[in-house]
Image 1: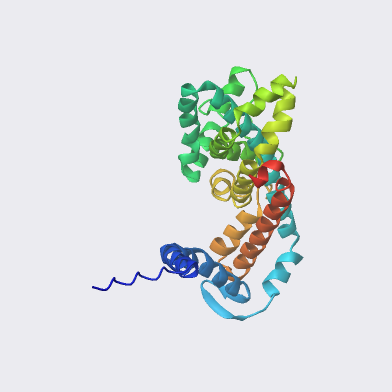
Image 2: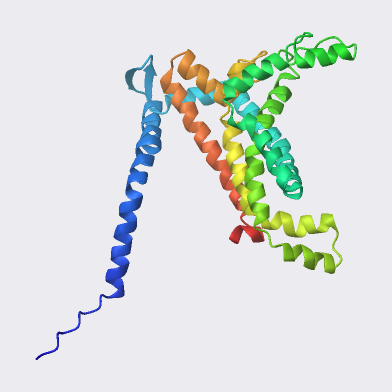
Length: 305
């Protein structure tokens, strides 16, 4: 009676090929969905930016004419400046506020979780609903919360949304109020990844709270800060619903950002060719800002973690 020959073991290359095949088959549906929803519309939008498209009718190829017209328009440059002002001012308030909230919520324990749930309510609301809510709050009469506050102190009511000097700061405050809780969640997760032993060792070495924060917390929180700053930059730079609901780009264009110019050009004036050119410029600016963030924060020790 002859012994059966043993099966020849598969090579490591065959196993690796099979693993790649299985992985690709699992990823493929999601990848196709991303291509269909994100990449193809973006490519089609760039295609339209090279054509004269008015009221959904393509009148022919014009090359870079839409871009040249855009960059020759002084109002477009002003809109870019307002977009950058709005974005960086909101970041300067939202990121430190989110970091303080994250550190405080971690110290509060269970009560911190309840507070975080409350803070998440504005983020979960539609931007148009937030705009309508704040429009009522800012009504310059005793019927509005701000108007009632002015009246309580014996001051004349101020219409913050129609004042050319105050409209943009007011819009920034509303945008920060709506979004900073999202940043808080990410930073809470980042803080949870920092080993507590590092703080104990720092205390033994005589480092105070500020030195521990500067030398331990901030460097090791760099990956989370990169995510927060990148996501908030995209959100603030592309913000349009709050502007439509609160100021409509006014007063005298003081809150007319590049995102609002895109909305007005593409959906009010129905100039889809130029509107898509604005969208392409916005995409490049967003990518440029994020590249700068990666270059700065990527050098921190925690970025490699």
